[in-house]
Structure formats: C-alpha cells, structure tokens
Image (cartoon, rainbow over all chains, first blue to last red; front, side, top):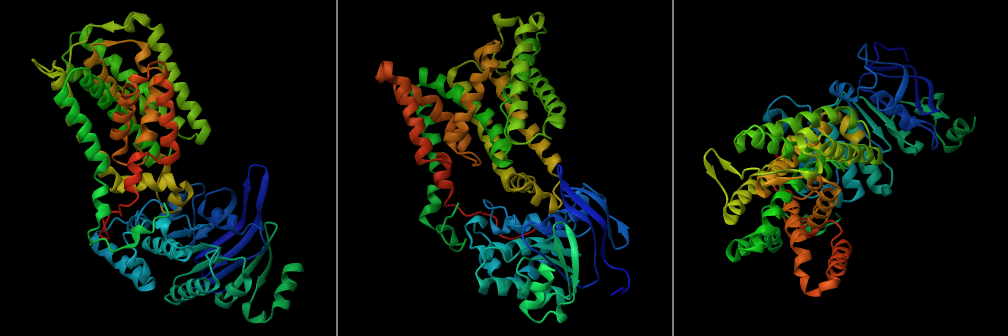
Amino acid sequence: MANPEPILKATGLSARYGHVEALKSVDMHVEEAELVAVLGPNGAGKSTLLRAIMGLVETGGTVHFRGKALPRHDTVAVASQGIILVPEGRGIFGPMSVAENLQLGAYRLQGGKGEYERRQARVFELFPRLKERLSQVAGSMSGGEQQMLAIGRALMADPKILLLDEPSLGLAPRVMTEILEKLRVLNEQGLPIVLVEQKAPLALKLARRAYLLSLGRIVAAIDPREVQSHDELARYYFA
Amino acid sequence: MTSLLATTLPSRFRWTDTLAWLPWIISAGIVGYAFLSGGYVVTLVVFALIYAVFVIGLNIFMGFTNQVSFGQNAFAAISGYTSAVLTTAYEWTTLPAIAVGVALAVLCAFLIGYPTLRLKGHYLAMGTLAIGLITYEISVEWSSVTQGYMGISGIPPLGIGAYEVTSDRGQLALLVVIVLILTFMSARIRTSRLGRAFFAVAGSEDAARALGVDVARYKLASFILSAACAALAGSLFVHVVGFVSPEVFGLHMVILSFTMLYVGGIGTVAGPLLGALIVSLLPDTFRAFKDYQDLAYGAVLILLLIYAPRGLAALFDRYVPAKKVGGAP
C-alpha cells in the first residue's frame, strides 16, 4: 500500500464542534488516481472528515496535499489548490439557473472563455442532461439532476481531487447507480476521489480502498476485494 | 421555487415572458399618473422614490446576499446630516455635499461592517439594530452640529451648480432617473460575477467557501453597496424636504423599508421600486375608511403576505428563466 507519494495525506486530523470532538486523530491518505471510500454509520464523523480537510471546521493535525501542508481555517485557499468538495445535500444554489451554478463552479478561473468552454464541454459530456437544463432554475430540478449539477459544478473548478459527501443521499436506486457510474468514469480518467458513503456495498464496488469510521476514529482499512458478502462487511461494522 | 413552467427551451417565446414586465408597467403607471395629476400625489411618489433608493440597497444586502440589517438607517442619517451641515453651516453646493455624505457613510459602513459581519443571523440583526440606535442618539445629543431635536432647516434643494430643481415635477423626474439608474445597476449586479457570489453566500456559506468564494469579502462588499444606497437616499431626503431631524432616520424608516422590501419582493430587481410605491400610496388609498384607515392598510398587508409571500414582483419573476445561457463568466 505504501506506493509513491500520496496526493492527499491527513495525519492526526481531529475536528471539534464546540466541546464535541467529532473526529479523533485520523490518519488517512489518497494516492494518485485512486478512489477511496469512507464508510461508517450515521454520526461516525464521515462528513466531518471532509469538512476538516476543507478547513470548514476547527481542526487539529495536518493535511498535506502533494507534499505541502494545507493552510487550516482557510477554505478558499484549500479550494484554490483544486481540492473541491461536493457537500452533503448537494449545496446547489436553488434560486439560480443551472448555467449560473456552473459559472460559480468556475469561480476561481482566471483564464478566458476557451478554458471555460472546455470545462463545460467536459461536464456536458458526462451529464448531457445539464446541457438541456441550462436555463432552468436549479432548485426546480429532480434530486438526481441536482446531484449531477453539484458534481458538474465541482468539475467546473477543474478539481485535482474530488471530495463527495453522500452523493446517493435521497436518490432512487436507478439514479444512484447512474451517478456512481459517472464517478467511476471520472476516476478512470485519472481523477482521485474520496467518496463518503453510508451505503457501503455501493461504494465498495467502485473503491480501491476503503476506510471504516466509527465514533470519530478509523477502525478499519478495508480492501474491497476481500469483502465479498454482506456478512463480512457486517463483521467490520460490529467488530 | 418549484416551477415546472421553467423547463421549456430558453429561445422560445412564451406569453409568461410578458408577465415579467408587469411590475415595471404598474410602477410606470403610478409614476406617470402622479406626474400628470400633480399636487399631493407627486409628493407621495417623490418620497416613495427616495425610499426606493434606500430599499434597492437593502435588497442587495438582504435579498441578494441573504443577510439581515436593521441599521441601514444609520447610513442614511450620516449622509443626510453631512449634506445638511455642509450646505447650511458651510454653504457648500448640493452635489459635493451629497458626494461627501455618501463617501463618509461608505467609510463608516466599511469600519462598522468589518467586525460586525462576523456575526450571523439574529446576532447580526441585533448588532445592526444597535448601529441604527447609536446613530440616532448621536444625532440627538451632538446638538452643536445637529441641533438636536430641533433639527436643521433651510437646506437647499437638489441641483447642479446654480441650477436648482425646485418644482414638484422636476424633483419627480430627477428621482425617476436616479431610481432607474440604480435599478439598472442592481439588475446588472444580479447577473454578474459579483451577484453570483452574493447569491452563493446567500445559498450556503460553506458551499460558497468550498468553491473558493471569499465569503467575508463579499458580505462586506454587499453591505457597503447597500449602505451607499441608504446614504444617497438620506441625502436626497434632506434636500427634497429642506429639513432634517433625528426622527427622519429613526426606527420608523427601518420598519417602512422592510415592509416595502417584503411587499415588493425580496431578492427581485423590480421589487424595491414596486414595494416602495405601493406601501407609500396604500395608506392614502384607504382615506375614505376614515377611522378604519390603518385597519384596512394592515389587512391588505396581511393579505399580501399570505397570497404573495415572496412579494409582488416575485409573483411574475418566478416564471422567468435566467436570461443568460452558457458562456464564460
């Protein structure tokens, strides 16, 4: 597992909301072009882990991106380096159109129209439906379409690594599969992904490695190939 | 927000597109009627337009950026008093006095906003309310400059150099131009990169941050833009009335401007103007009710909140798809 330099490496990462410590000294890493799943029950600290990487919560410990320490409590600086979060509940901007949401994704883009068009073409290739819905108010779309928009918007930022917080939440199984399939395509194109997911079997189909979080700690590193049945997974959960 | 009508292609004409013009047509109708009929209605509409300037600013901060401020009247007071003092005690002409007043208010907004905007929700509301109350107290107590409750009278009317706009209709025309310019600016802001950042902050601060939007900076920018409009309204008011006292910029101004913003349509472009006109004229339309005038006014406000909870302009705005499609930011 100790391949070259990991693209993202968290060491002793902890996070707290007031007096509650939601994340307790977590060590994890993501290698180039790797899809890593973070599993665990409700309240395990999965979302907090992503928020801690982004610097959206009060944290301790360090996060290194491509060998360099990330600034803490400066989410804008983290995002500027290409670490892009698709937040839980999608975080799309409801009153704005699909086009405007995508424009916000490319908010840090300094280059001209050409680069913007290139990124947008990539998003449309992945989610043709967004192209059809460009002028629609984002809040009026279906849950699946909103999730597509949330991922599309993140791609407009030209991410170097994508952090996804429960993209399957509240979606019909068929839509869920469709979205996860797109994530697989993105990952095969070389994009490293951290996928937080409560539905472990789904995530394990895609992931090369998985961490299991429980009560704010990583309790197991899972090799998906070794987990062939529900029973084995359940053992991890209840061990 | 769940509008199924907005799913059609943007290029095709739909009859609902014309509905989007209705708030403008109604506003133009009211102003046109006032201009033609003259007299008391002109005075009402002139005040409505000054308030529209104030509410356009309030809308940028509260509607676009989804923050709360009960203290924008402070900036109207700062600029209004600056205008009044400079033109009376120091005999400045109107235009430079307004410019200095607005600049001073903007500077205050920067100094006040920088620490205050770290507050959120109710705390921000309380903090800004305090700003308004403090400014009121200063305008009462600093009597060597403000002349306390007595106020300052003899403030010259609006004008450029030697040319003064003194007639009711002249003031009305001038204010229409100012409101149109500000409305156009607010429409441009809404569809610009700046406006998208405001709306992102409004939607979710964390999501905005995660996309690289500097939330604190845009909150401050929005606050300052809003304060600049409030300041301009304050100066316009003292020059139109020719008199200023602490009560002019009191809590009443806050309540009235909030009513206008919500009745007109918070977050819309046409809302501030429509709201300012309707709320200004509504009480007088019920004058025939005599003792029950306030009752009728209140009843109508309640009905508006029930049947148009997002304001009158939003009734039509809802059907309008965003105009810009694709393209670079």
